[in-house]
Image 1 (tube, one colour):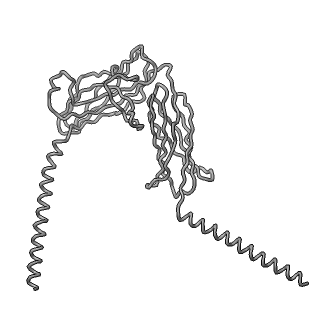
Image 2 (cartoon, one colour):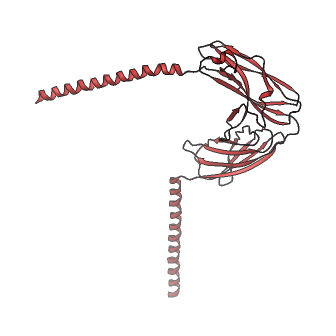
Image 3 (cartoon, rainbow, N blue to C red):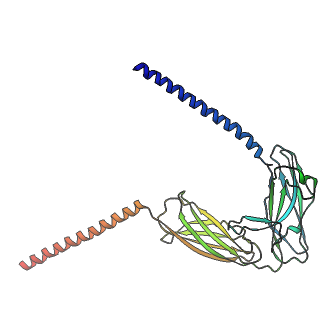
Length: 329
């Protein structure tokens, strides 16, 4: 009987080793098959700096110029071709995500942008700068203009490089331009709200701001948080972002409280927007109650009520006793 058990144990051990080796072999095969796929899927790495020009101002008929730096951190030579496009805020989101287009837009400027060369060749690990120009037409209307400088490995249509088969990569720099003149700066708070304290101990304040004018602006200001006693517990600087015309931008400002929150809190945002510093203000509130604290308060209230009742009963008994003694006299 013991010999049978030993033979059975050895058989199970051998079977387990066989399964383990098979599993290990399959895992190695899967890794070997996966690694070349990763390498084949790698595109050309490109970096551009800066990624945003949002403080440019020009008068009608004026020319602006600047430069961007392109870098190739990859291990292969890269040729980049600069082009320009228009952009609008993505209508599916209020996060300020740009939607690039070659079509004309009410605030487009792609035809105003040109470059000092048609291509940039970058060796592995190399960087280079390319100069750009913005020629504002003399009859340009005052207000905001929005474009993008696109640097792509895709050659322009009609060139010999267009037929080459390769993975396309591209980066872009956004351009927000103010054409000076009689502009319209107008906007309003659509909503100021919060969901209160989250699981990570933070409070996010959401400010949805609408731009009803014809030029972009960046709201700025402070959010003041007060407790149920009216005392100020914190002040947080508003995380303002660019709001483009005919759009709504949702800006989130995070507050990280120090210590435990309890009771009702009111947040008031006071800010300004535009070159004229137009003021705006809005309020929201949230509450935070802890079960343990509520239980302690409830116990204290019950004890107070019992104490009052017992004191009242004792007083009545004492008063009744005194009355009876007086009557006996």
